[in-house]
Amino acid sequence: MRMSARERVLTALHREEPDRVPYCELSVDRPLAQRLMGWGEPVSQATNLEANPYTVEEAKAIAARLKLDNISYVLRAPVYAHKHAGKDGRLFYGEGMIKSEDDLELLQLPDPFDDALYAEAERFVQNKGDYALFFVTRIGLFPTMLSMGIENFCLALYDNRPLVETILDRYCDWSVAVAERVCQMGFDVFISTDDMADKKTTFFSPAIFRDLVAPRYRRVAEKITLPWVIHSDGNVLPFLDQFLQLGISGLHPIEKGAMDIRRMKQEYGDRLCLLGNVDLNILGMGTPQEVDTEVRELIRDVGPGGGYIVTSGNSLAGYLKPENVLALSEAVQKYGSYPLHL
Image (cartoon, rainbow, N blue to C red; front, side, top):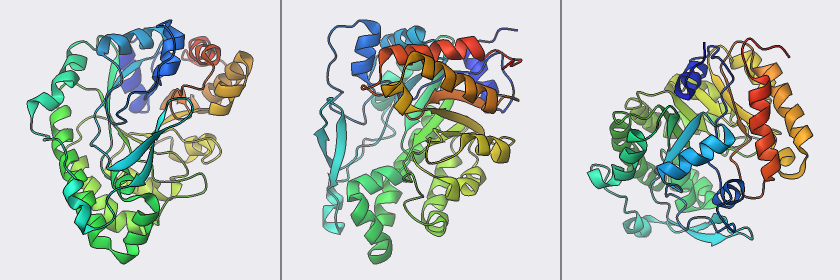
């Protein structure tokens, strides 16, 4: 029986077989969307890395073009770091601004109890149609790291733990209130995007995660009543059991070259929905046929039994070839119907 996009995504997140493997993306860079949609010349990314990049009408138009099963709404707490633009117009975080207790006065977060903060989110909820609506945010770890600067953060874990705790508490307090509000609004999936690792391993030890991060994330988790997906680049395998104890439903993007999604399916597929991990190198430099093969093999190896959602290996960046992104979308339609015959 044909499912709606929302039903398809939620079935996969519950580790069951929907009618087809879902295809979702957390974000699509505006320069790529401009080319895909014929919206004129590519423009620079939005100047605010925490802001929602599209109206609900634009988000649905992009989803229809790419045959996505989701649309996303972004609301992130401000990061107190210098920002700079790359050659493609993308913004990147630079040096953190909060180096010591003297800088804490910079840390001013929007009122999470102000109805105005959720006005645009409400528009997405009211107009989401049949799509699965993702709420995309950061809980607190990554904003803390970025606001301090990653090197300074890592040193402070040992030299000034109280400063780290103070900043992390402020972000997590904000996230507790936001999570409670948005989970009552009509969103379908809660996505937290806190990077915690590079390709080799996590930024800090599992013991630090257990003692510093997990208790604060648990306070937020108590308010998350939707399926919860953690996004982190890199190899987060050392943290995975603790993620599961927090109650997550899915992991994204299981970065190629950092984690083996096929091994993950074997070892965690009974407890975790896997979202990923179409190779960005192929999407950026390969051919449509190579993309087709990549998607087919992922669906063949990770799709059986459900619990798999196809996504790019991070997000649809502005440098990707439009023809390859369209090939990704078409390959899901071509190969993803259950029962799989690959």
